Length: 62
Picture 1 (cartoon, rainbow, N blue to C red):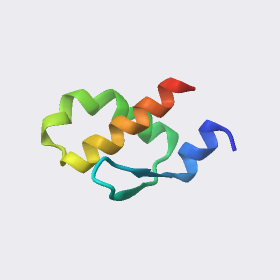
Picture 2 (picture 1 turned 135 degrees about the vertical axis):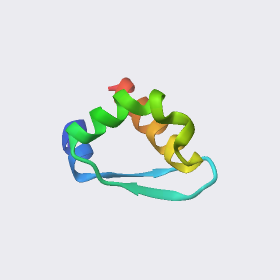
Picture 3 (picture 1 turned 90 degrees about the vertical axis):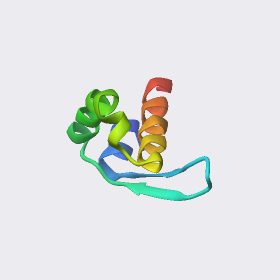
Picture 4 (picture 1 turned 120 degrees about the vertical axis):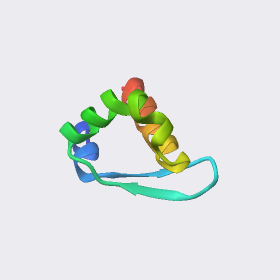
């Protein structure tokens, strides 16, 4: 499974606190969130910030 397919099908992320968060996003939605992440960062819950941060890290490693 390549990275693009895994993003389309969703990905479960284990956060620092040990909670597993299932995030299911279309690739376009993911890119939009990545672009807006810094703007809305303070209004997001901590767990969503962690999950998006991990998604961005995973994308940058590819």
